Length: 223
Image 1 (cartoon, rainbow, N blue to C red):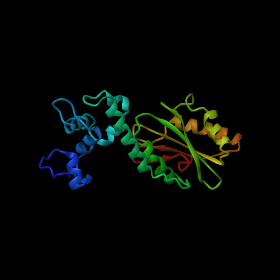
Image 2: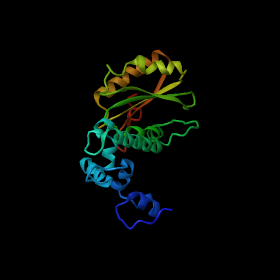
Image 3: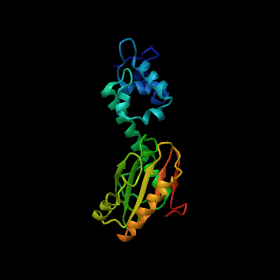
Image 4: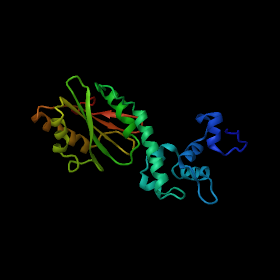
């Protein structure tokens, strides 16, 4: 039987007796780390990691490779943290197994914003829709700096043709957090719109995801 612990810095026991919401960020993080290092508890390591990045939000945006280089972390703990943060993003995205309808940019952002808003690299993704704006599937097209050389029309429209999609929604994120479209964003969007017309496909929108916000190029009259 678990005995109530009088020791204040045992997050596992505090969670059992007081609930997860009673724990500080460092204590919750320490539970994911599991163990500390010689002379430092898991809570000590967690506090140092948080101090390095300033917040859980900034920590969650880091790649596992970077986290593994932190003192007291290593590859196994870094993988555990990265998996935890990705699970949180997917839960926040609230994309159920049932049919998803994407009729406007707000719905697109609600579905994909949590997956993309805190990434440290640009990711270009497409959502393929049926005639009723129901989501057929989505696919990541490229990762890295957004440019025509990385986002080729062939890679964008091949999945749409294979899925017999009626229309496409383009998405990408700005790691800076500011979703204001760049000249390259607008140029690439117009290039893809012209290509889509030749294939008798429609691009509904290009949604740029920022930190806690988004921009719809369709709403701005750029499509």
